[in-house]
Length: 227
Length: 256
Image (cartoon, rainbow over all chains, first blue to last red):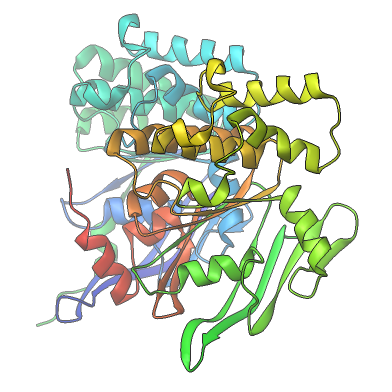
C-alpha cells in the first residue's frame, strides 16, 4: 500500500547564506495493508520529515513515494488533494485548525468531505470525542483554547473519523495519560484489523511495541556528516 | 477531466515594464488557487487579465463553458464575455464600492443580478435576495437600505451575495479582506470558506496575506516582479518553500 523508493531530500536556506542541509538520502520502505510500521531514530534524525514527504507536505528531491498507484513525489496537486481526501490520512504532532470552528465540526470534516451525510458524520464525530474523553460541554467550542492533551485527542479523533486505507501518525500518544493512551492504542489496532497500512512515530516504547509489527531506523537514511 | 480554466502564457506589459510574464496553469472544478506576492508583483494585473478586465498582450484564457465547450475568453466578443461575467464568473473587488451599485438598495443589488439573467417575478427575486442576505449574515430588515449606510464588512458581504446569487462556477477575488478590521476579516474568511465548500466553487484569490491563503487556498502561486517564482500545494509551498523569495515571505510573517 505504501512504498517509498530511494527518496532523498535536503533543505537549502537561500536567505541564510545558501546553507544546504541534507536530511534524508536513499530512504526506502514498504508497508502492506494491515501492517503498522514504526519509524525510529533520535530526535532530529528525519522521522517527521520523511512522514511529511510521504504526505506531500514536503517535496522529495528524488525517488518515488507510492501510495497505491499514485507517486506523491511527482503527482499533480489535484491528485495529491484527492489522495489526502480519500486514501491517506495524517495525524500530525500538533493540531492546526481554522479558528472559530467548533470541535465537533473539526472532527466531522473528513467525513463531510468524502460525502457522508451530515447527521451521520456528526454522530460519528461525537462518538469519537466521547471515546477520547473530551467532555460534551467542549464539543461546541473551538479547540484553539484547549489544553495540549485535549488538542491532541481532537487531532486523533479527526484523523480516525474516516477509514483511510493508509494512515500516518506522528506521536499519537504524546501528551496523553494512561487511559487515553489505551483508547488510542485500540483505535490503531482496529484500523489495522480493517486493513489500513500505518506508519507511526512513537517515542513511547511500550505503545510502539504493542501496536507496531516492525521498526525502521531512519538513521540509516541520514546523510553522513561532512568531515 | 477537462480543467475548468486553462491559462496559457498570459503576459501583459505596461510599455516596456512587465506587468506579468508568461503565466500558465490549469484550474480544476472545486480548486481554490491563491496568488500571493508583494506590491508590484503583478498579481492584480494577472487577475484582471484572467477575469477579462484587462486585455493581455499574449496568451489565452480558456474556460470550459456550459454550452460551447472550451473557449478562449480573450478572443471572445464583448457581449459573450459580459454574459460569462454575470453567470458562470464572479469578481469580488477589494473595495466593495467597486463591485456594488451604491445608490441601489441591498436587495436591489442582489436582485439585479438575477434580473440580468432573465428572472422576472418580483416576489421570487425579492425572496431569493433576502435569502442570500441571510446567508451572508445581513439582517433581512436591511434589505431596502442602501449600501452607503452599511459598514465596510457589511458592504463586502453584500458584494459576495451579489456575486454568488447566480451560482457561478469560478470566482475571482482581489484582496477580499483587505482594509477590514481583524475580527471582521475573520468572520468574512469563515463565510467565504463555507460558501466555497458548500457551492463547490473554483476560485482564484489574490492576496498579500499568507494567512488568508493558508485558510482558503488549496494551491498557491508566488509572484515576484511579474513572474511566478514558485507554485504547488499551499501547505507544501508554505511549509517547505523552495525559492529564496518564498522563503523570505514565509519567514517574514509575524506570529501572534
